[in-house]
Image (cartoon, rainbow over all chains, first blue to last red):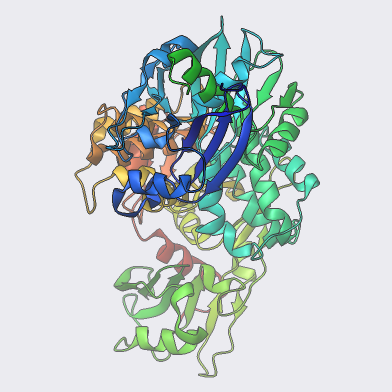
Length: 304
Length: 304
């Protein structure tokens, strides 16, 4: 007879640049985790089925259902799954799973991403983060009214209301930071390799983000301050990061305590930024996406 | 006897990525112009003297004095010339020329760049643009109170008061645009090669820059709108450009009619952006830097 701790699902968060797999038990606990850089952009010859099979090797998983989220459901992924329009309740996602024809006879599904529009009608999208949100919504201390922040290359600010994902906005903070420091003129003054975090420079950047002159002006300070020897080269990255994250977080109107989603080394940085802005915030547990996918699988009746 | 139209000066604007030389007559008129990509970053083996000699080949210039401005006076240039602190009058610049030891016996000078500090004490710098400002200050319709905008990779907003350069701010608009479109995810949706300008997309970007959500959020629309087929791929660049330039220009408090300095294909774009923001602005004539360098050379008594 099947036990609560037997494997019952393989949950997969398959993003643009990375892949994370969870072997999940019938009771939702995570038994094993695998992670690598074979994101959607790096799948050899678009062979998603073969790539997935390699990653599953050795897991007692031949007959287990697989539920995936992330860019694997985009046009560049395995199968394009249309976005669901906000507001979206967990049950809506459970009803909208798209089956993948894998030729193996096993059940493989992709969960849709979300779309919303702001007051001006400009669309915004997410693929993958919704699994974490579902996990957070089911947590022991979840409210039906919550603001969430998901740091990342394109970080997301999410408003949850009446237990549904009401709206969200994306912010290109991580990408702009990477471009400025790796390819731009600011990066030329920065030392190669890892440097120690500089909390004071980060805090100075956050303060700077409130000054007049605008973001495009303020980031020029990450060039002129080192030029005048008023900021040390190892501190440039933290100063710039403070300016960008400060702008990002100030641009949203937050309600109550913000839940900062984990799964990235950026979480502690974001929690500190919220503190500096006197906005209550706390870090959420890691691996909420496995929890969210398990909940949806159970709801959709596809658990083993 | 020397005539007013005889060559009297070689004026050189030697920037990071390009080099522009003017053969200037005694009366300040431009006789000939040369231009190329041998900017400070591209000078072979740091051989500034040899590079300059090659560029002067064939000009009746053996004995003419040379006055340069731009990054040639930076740490990475021919000779580092300390910045002058604002406010700066034209006469201050004339007194601060730095002689270059060229070994040729001819007179070669570099004009210093400018530095200022904002209310928070953060420094800002320019090297090269000050020559254009001097040219504008000496124009027939110059005021002693003027706001100037110099579009570029790091565009400058300059306040001129009582005939002096009072303060300025730099904005990384051009660099951020180049990074986002050449290296970033937005660029992946853009067609290769030149596209026709799309005035409506540019205007939509400027309007968008006034919406809530902040710059880091708004630029994500340059990804989601094409994804939803609500913006055509050839229009992405103009839409993004409108958002960035809109943010740049809104961040400064302008007084009266803004003079937009020429010398870049961006001028018409900036004048249109000012119009969209209902800020009076007009384009200035090109080659004002040659005029400014000639004025300073005359003042310093180094004209042939």
